[in-house]
Image (tube, rainbow, N blue to C red; front, side, top):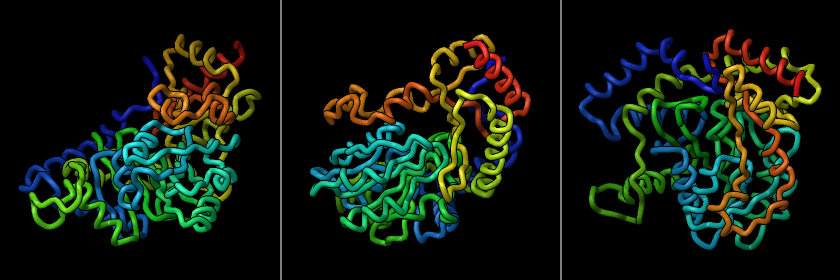
Length: 370
């Protein structure tokens, strides 16, 4: 039996009755687009973050793009972020017409090195997008210090950090606005695509609602400003409402899986396990480890039926689709070094104990041999 880093079927079997009831609730509601389920989820997700507003959108990429546009980012601007992220973060910035500018990440936790932000600011800089990667938060005090000094906007990319906390504050509540993805693999995942932006700013919220709905505000067919068709689906919203009540339980289950990995693998010298940053409560969206002979390890594990992922094997600035940014190889040495060493172990709340045990045993055998 093959082992993968993620599988939704064990969770589905446990939650099946509630999830099917969510679908039936929408189908019986008489409103399939921007109805009660979307409104209810927006209110509840905003309340979870202790913020005034949430605007549901169709996916996490558009959550970043529309969030930045609502903050006033556009052509001619620069937005500082990292290259050690999923490509959609940078695609969203590029999609606004702004230019992504990269800083490197920290060796110890793979997160934005906020000590490099000041040197990256230019007269064209408009915003910073800190990526709360793998399930824990960036040093937001460092981000806010630079943003306040230069009058920059901050959009948190929380696609991988639902429910994570930094010095007691939940990811998404430490900036002008924050973008979320509800792709099925996420800590709070839908059964399809979905996204949202949260904010305390009423003007940002109004712009977001226009942007996701063609640029229309009060009357259909009357476009106030050019917008998008980027609505959160009613069925996914109702599923997310149900799952939101279990978000903290999902995070607790992920931490339990992480503790077992640490107990079982912590004595292996060349295998570097995740480190939690100061003041962080990690939710372990993925459990990312390092090994200097990563590729040999992954190949050997296939003989055991274990197929693991790399998040991410190619830094964004090295991809051919971003050659126009003219960032040379070697410009981000930590990011580039990590890309050759990191890989992810199976991680999801309903991960069966026997699957985790099989992964641990196989990994120990492989590491003793490579």
